[in-house]
Image (tube, rainbow, N blue to C red):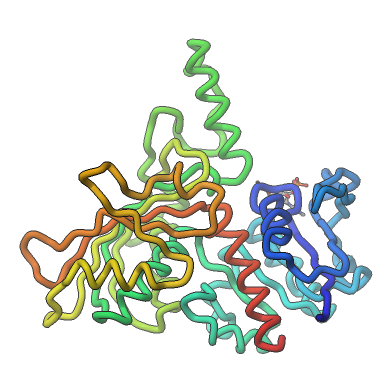
Length: 343
Ligand code: A2P
């Protein structure tokens, strides 16, 4: 089997570090691994498969010099905007974890369990976009339900972990909690989020949009439509919560008017879908929670219940590890599919 030269841009970040673990877990066919970050981190080490590898500085020529075949980008939108083209020019496929290219019409936006066929369009730009973390875990649950009954509308509230703001977000929650126990919370740093996140919830993720939603909320709308190839109506409320690294979502789905929801059928469809599992035994306190999904590659669904009034409406709760399912694992699954489809 062919082996690939793989670059990780943002190798010292939360998603970059996880990518090394996921690449190992999936036994990814690697010839040479090239960790890339800013000049600040060049020369530092990252660990892959028990070995230390030196981080190189991201430059315009590094992809060509290292004969990179696959480049994972996870260093922010501005870095992708500036450097993805150099990876493409060097002949690599770029798998981009930022929002920069997601809505470009000729860039495929892929969750491999949902729309693997879109990967085939990668050649138009050399780029495949990884969706927003909240979108990924939601569409993993929506796809089997859409196949089952046909979805008209989705209303979702998210409970998003601080890992979505990278290592700085995770460190800020930990530091604020330490400050709380030292009776110094008022003096703790507040940089990653607009407000204190410890012992708080913040109903804003990303910047305000003219329509009153946030950019994160509108990402969930537009990306869901692009991935499902359907003008499904989506309304999202995205909330940051003091959880380290798994996102939760409370989802209400409205199906076509003539649908009479059968909860057993819904559970069955979710259970059969790849990388989705159902935990749903309310009487025995069993349901998805962030502590269940963290460090796993599964999207868990539960609390599945038919609406009290409308026969075509179901409510449920889902959780997934934001760093893995919402970023690193989805990227690696895209790359594996890309290889399987014959590049
Ligand atoms: P560095 O550690 O050198 O700053 P996180 O999402 O956890 O905050 O991590 C962001 C990642 O993106 C880090 O690996 C960081 O590297 C990298 N990064 C940020 N800005 C740049 C840049 N201008 N060029 C290359 N890598 C960058």
